[in-house]
Image (cartoon, rainbow, N blue to C red):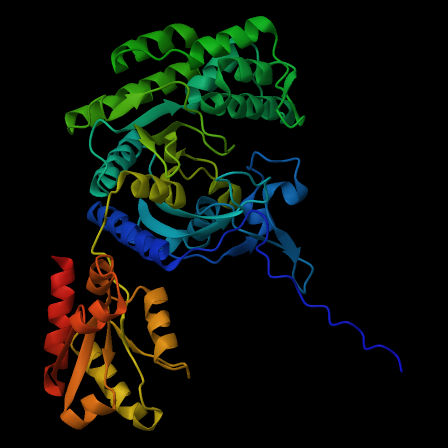
Length: 498
């Protein structure tokens, strides 16, 4: 008799570069999003949702990881053999939406949106293939007042979430200034070669925080090999060209006024560079007159942003404080959001320039920072009360008690398994239930119900040394008339909250 083929079971495993999100983190994120949304609404932005998929040609080719399959995006063909891609950010879909609905929209069009985005990039620590963004954008105006407003909005969001002034900074630069510097060193023109070189330079500068000045200099020149042995081709600049770029990047000074003075010297006679410096001056002035001085909004030439579609002011929200993680290590979170002006995205569809600017918050990174510093946004939701089922012939009685608690606004669930009391108590412990409700045969006959305070019971059990003391003390357990169920449970919860 032939042996039966061995059953091959799929391995329960999480795809690399992705993660599952627990209930506590999901709720914390929801509270954080609600706080951010309240600021966006206060500024007059309106919500919008767009699909996870877009036609690939609508997204464009702006991602930095161009050596990966699909050039940084996840793509597939539909039944009509048209290529679709998961959105890599929320900005490109917005550009498509505006172009498609342009005549019907009030302009400037102001929208906010949050949702997951996907990047087909090499995953690493804290670097996932899927993550959440929360954006606010203004489309249809070239005024730098729109860029300044987003800097102020971002600052207000951070403070709304409990990050005090002095522990964050909005850092602002202008891509036109970088273009002016590139003109000064002979990198200019409209052909693809010049465009690629400019993009390589901006992506090198964008890695300054991670690689330091020497690492950036290597990427401006022939290239750099990282610790794993992977080689990244550089921009091919000469030593003198790289020197001027580094002088631009390191033009940070003690005040916005001194940064502006340094930049005017560096851009020289470049008209484009001069326009960029003028716009930075206006943004700084608009922010300062509104109470957002350079301790909150700071000009910083090292900010360039890695995406290729930015055309003017760019900005990043940086957390400047240090904190310790669960292992006791000191961590700095750096940038938790960024954005800038992208006057060419809608133009790709319409053929005419439609100016736009936006800001995006990296939700997961910001949530991690809030967790480390203990910032809270909204009331914590406790686990539900568990109503035990002591007699399956009286299942309806347990169900009725559960509904009474819910009707009173108390989170509650009836135990839905088929195990006995010991297993039900273990279940309640694993759920983190604050209390359980017990109506056994004796309670039912007496018209009573027992509420066991699990939190208090755990505390008291630490001081009890034997079973006899446990039985005689009946810690954290009270029996009340059946009609007092809701009141008794509420008393337990109130006592736990202090």
